[in-house]
Structures are given as C-alpha cells and as structure tokens.
Amino acid sequence: MAQPRRTLVPPAVTEFLGSARFTSTLALLAVVTGFSTHAIRAVIGWPGLIGVLGTIAVLAALSFIAQRKLIEWHGLLPISALLFVGWCALSIIWSDYQLATVAGVVYQLLFAFLAVYIALVRDAIQIVRVVGDALRVLLTVSLALEVLSGLLLDMPIRFLGIAGNIAAGGPIQGLFGSRNQLSIVALIAFVTFLVELRTRSVRPALAAFSITLAALCILLAHSPVIAAVSVVVGFATLALYLLRKVPANRRTLVQWGLAVVTVAALVVAYIYRTRVIDLLNARADFQVRYKLWIQIWELIPINQIAGWGWTGAWPSDVYPFNAIQDATGVYHADGLNAYLDVYLQVGFIGLLLFVALIALAFSRSWLLASNRRSVVYAWAPLVLVALLVTSVFESSILIESGWMLLVICTVKASQGMSWRLRLPHREDVSG
Image (tube, rainbow, N blue to C red; front, side):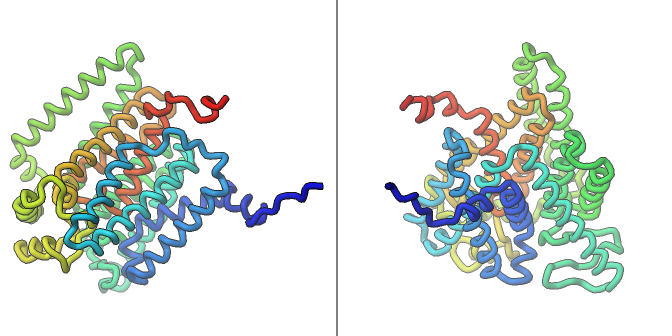
C-alpha cells in the first residue's frame, strides 16, 4: 500500500502564508516600509532597514511558494522591466566601484521583488486600498510630528530632520527627509484618495479626511517642484475623465489629438521655461539643480554608451559622485533628474531601456484607464504622470518607493495589455 506523501511544510502553515489576510498585511507592510525608508534609517540605521526589507522579502517568497498554483504568471513580468534591471545588473562588469554597484543592484532588485509580489497577489482596487492605507498613516504621523516639533515642543526633531517650521506655515518634510519628497508622496496620496472616493472603497468621511490631509501636506511643504507637477496631473485627470466619456469608435482619434496637444504643450513649456520658473518662484531651487546637471552632463561623455555603473542612490565616497559634490559644494544623494541619472549610471543603452520601460507602462496604463469601465484603472496612469513629471526634478522614481510604484504599475499594465498574453499557454500547448 502506497504511503501518503509527506510535505516538508505543514499544510496549516502553507494555508496561512497563502491566505488573503496574510498577503494583505504583508503588502501593506511592504508599502509602508518602502515609503518610510528615511525614517527607518534615521531610527535603526542601514543594517536595520536591510533587515526589515530582507524579512519582508523572505515572507513574500514563502507566500509566493504557497500560492504558486494560484498565480497566473503567463506574460506578467514585462520584458522592458527585465531588460532595464538586467542592464543595471550587467554594469557590475565595467563599474569602477563594483561593491557599490552590487549593493545598488541588490537594493533595486529587493524593491522590484516586493513590487512584483504586491502586483501579483493584489488586484487593482486592493492595491489602491493598500497604498491609501499606508499613506494615510504616514502622512498623519508626519503632520503629528511636525505639530509636536513646531507647536508643542518648539524644538526640532533632529534625527528625522524635522525643523519644526509648521508654526511659520512651513516648509515641512515629515517622515520623508525633504519637503520635495513629502510633496511627491502627498500628491500620490491625493490621487489615491480620490480614486478611493470615486470607487467607494472607503467611507466618505474617511475619504474627506484623507484628501484634506494630503492637500494640507502639499500646501505646507512649499515645494516649487510639486506646483508644476500638480498642474500636469490635474490636466491628465481632466483629459482622462473626458476621454472616458467619448464613444469607443472615436476614442482612438481623440487619443492622437491628446498626444499632439501634449507634445505642443511640452514644446511651449520648454521655449518659455524661464517664465515658467519665475511663475513658480523656483529660480533659486532651479539654479541649484542646473549647476548639478551641468556637472553630470560633463561626465556623461566619458562613458556615454554603457555608463559609469549602477548605484541607484549616490555613494558619497566614490568617483565620479564625490567629484560632482566637490564641484557643486553641496552633497546630493542623487542627480535630481531621473533621466540624467540613468544616462550617467548606465549610459545611452540604459537610458533607452528606461524610456522604453516607462513609455510602455504609461501607454498601457492609459489605454486601460480609457477603455475599462471601472475608475480604479485611472490610478496607475495618474500615479505614473506624477512620477514621470517629477523625474525631471527628482530621481526618486529610481529607488525605494518611487521604483516600487513604477514596477507595480508596469506589472499591472502588463497583466492587462501584454502582447505575450496572446501566446498559447503551456497547458494549451500540451492539451
């Protein structure tokens, strides 16, 4: 008589790791960690942050294994993302700072893995809820700490970098390390909370509180960057709303019209960029960035095709990043422009792969939002608009929470529109 097959992991454990409650909690924990890396580093340092991320990644891997028969992998991992990450990893070969490149690639892969986990075990509305819950908590804590520092204690919270400026109306930065990063997070939260409201996935009172919270954080951050980004996201929201009202047989023509108008608007904005900067009262902020960009542009031709080697965030003690700091007289954790940053680190090939990645992710997400009935599909393209426009002024899309959101949106868009979905499945071929 055949003996029953023994399993290494008890069925109860497998059932728990694959349960909806476990995956929901783990996804929430991953998003909260991704957006609060600055605060975690400030409290327990880099070893603590890596320990937290590693633990979440191990739990995610175990959860993947427990659900491996339930997840449809066919055509889900976008080739564009795999090529970009692969090229970054390949730069270890020619990098002059190989240890920093290995660390940067591992860090990039860690967040990419968590993003893929979230995208595959949560559907669109669940992802919106996870991001909404995480940002609701983080923005509330940020505002509470600013009130504690600026109004109750009247002293800065130095280890978090909180200066206590809320009594003067800002600028504030909360848990996120800078006012620009707070404003970016708050804008993404604002979009998320609006989608929550429209999909009725939270109570109206909670949605109203959340939207007010995000708007207040944006206003108190006083970020010159976010003003321009908010205008673009507002126009994208209006365009998407109107586009969804257009009959399906005319939608393609309207899409091309929107594309032409967008290109024309970008050309006009570039021609009148000086006036735009003055209008945003961002001349001093722009001059800092411009000085940094000039230094980056001078170093790019030295390794123009393949780049200097991937690091993600800039290490302060290796060339050419320390040379840039010496030339500008200011420490910069990144290039304050994602596109130049990619060009510097992984060269022209890496830049082409990155542009292909974001172009495919955005176009697929936009088309899904245009053609699907549910409002929840509007979340991904609007978040991508915020990230892509911000990338002209910040490099946050390349690391941590920005990179996590990009990968989540890319995978979800690929789920809906990948050309590989039309290929025969393995079981179809065998059957």
